Length: 450
View (cartoon, helix red, strand yellow):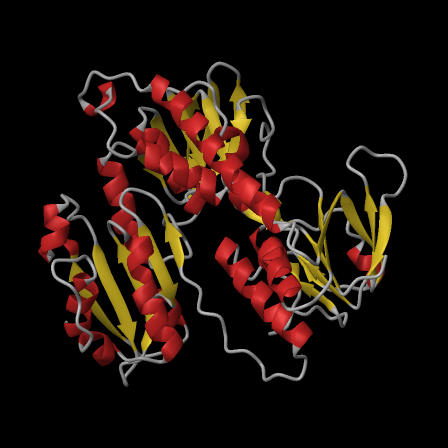
């Protein structure tokens, strides 16, 4: 079958790009081997945010000085999460009925640079071959596992399994203090689990501003989460309970747990695509792409986690727009670099966009830090959410190089700084913008005026 565009993968990058391409007049074949919506909808962004919401405003647990056993809440939270996911999957399925889109269920592999064969999910003979001048690879990522003894033992789970637990673990050990690890730490601590986080780097959230990460760790520690940083997991053994051995500052230690979450990151999903046969260049991070998201093979693009640039659902969607623009207008000027914010849905939330102080210092770039604190904001005090800060980093002319927020609704507030950076606005422009009172956005105003 000949078509205009083949998209491999129906995650956010894949299905959103397919809809845009179809509305632009292209005939699109979308190939998906598992679930519509990809990791984000089925085992990532949406399910975890559902549990984050369910974990808010719970009655105190015994470990928090209350008398409530929250085991029953987990069952209800999982049920609500499943309901939300199914509702959104139905929405994606409806989008795949957009005129011009053909959805094919099966495993894709390249035959040549313009042809993709599909094996049906049920096995057997080939499900057909599809040919197009342009192909977008949007196959996402898979969970990484540490190469240590016991990494795949019973009771060691990924985020996918943790999202479907039927019983609340009394003790949860999390290997990895990145976004996934901290979000689950916050959720399960709120529900009553004793949570221990083991992080290899010197600080949690290694990609975030270190000042922000340290403050978040301190806040989570006050809530009852135990942290071990600069700690390397060595082995997982035992049965009931499991025991995680780790080395911290040269000393071998261990922690017992009913469940162990492996949260050491995700790797580009390159399985079974036969990329080397087509000559597509890859690195350990993923598929190599240019500023148009095009690979070294003309007409083949890679977006989202599979290219290893930034593993975020909204990054995949944005990269899909870049790739589609190049397909539709190949002679158009190179796009501006994408400015992509990140958020962590812990309590309190953390969010960032642009560069950190550590990155600027390492690059030898002079900067000025402008700070303001939640505790001085009327809305934050009224919400009983005075734990947090805003930090804006600027160059000598006042252009915003980065913004880092810790506190309530950080994931919403970060977009004001993101837009300012996109438009090339200065911190003075931000200070001259009228902000509603009382609102949390006034914290950004206070930082701009600092």
